[in-house]
Length: 433
Image 1: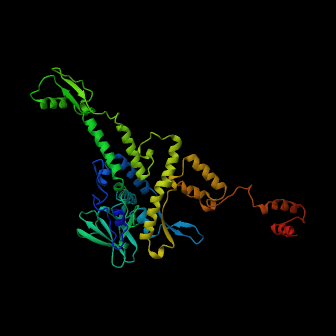
Image 2: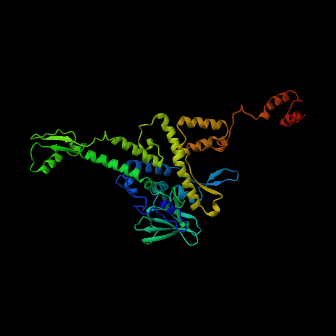
Image 3: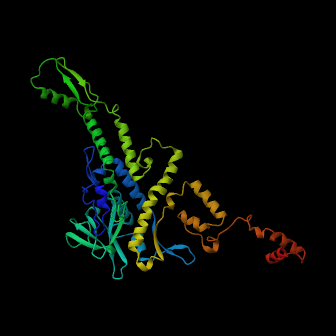
């Protein structure tokens, strides 16, 4: 409980307890004996694949600035100063894709993503530059305001004139925290699951060592007599039969020597099963379906599509909301927050196959809640001119309101007999009588 009581202490001075590559109380040695940090973790294929899948997925989503309309709808605002920065070019050195991919990888490895906000004299954002999370600390001043200190030792950011510690106000930092104890500084997923990652590293090293030794566990060379130089015999054996390039060679034993294998073969030790389980552990850490990182053992054509939809809804969507709210809070001016919002569009990832989309569009078109241009916009097609009916909302003619059900019959009768019912008003009058 000592650790948790320390984490939940007063927020007079919140600290990033996961600084540097050794994270004082989370990173370091693991039960497997392997040191785990963000760099060694990325050397495992499962971690690298999960980070890459999530980073690329979020970076590829369309990112737009929207404005609320008086009628309750919304519309894109390409003329807003933020639109070009978020959608195309956050700074003169990066595209929007690279910028978001970089920050998302920081978020997945360190638990926090930071970017420096460059503003003009009116406070509007003119550029965004990534900041390395392992060099950032979060503090609170005597007035209760958050501020950030960044330690610069390399030239990753062109906006700092000097090396050393740079102080940034909260208005100058876009901070996207991951899951956190205090809501201020996120926890590193890698640090929290260091034993699982360490075991995965150990399994990979064991497998590499196994094949480096010719895919043979250790063994004993038995000689019936006394050897004057046993080291020479051992080195000669290793030179002739050690290493993966010598695997499968036929050994020639002289002077009555025998080779006695010792150790447990990897199959008997369930080495391969352990590796598969560790892949599942890493995928569970990031909530990534196994088929997205190349593990297809339990995947079928019938469940992959459903798993892909679940990936968008339960894995990607929470990250999307976290990004949207952080950008809206930090990048929009206070006076703009009631009228504008920032949105990452995931619709393209859940559209389904071509036939499913066409069936859905047909239903929407026939029931009047999508126009031809609405559909064409979702399919990235040019709009039909309004004069040709591109923006018309149509409805199937065999559907009508219950109170209007007898109008057609009344109008028909009225055309033959001037005394017939002419309109809905007369129907209501007769009903009242």
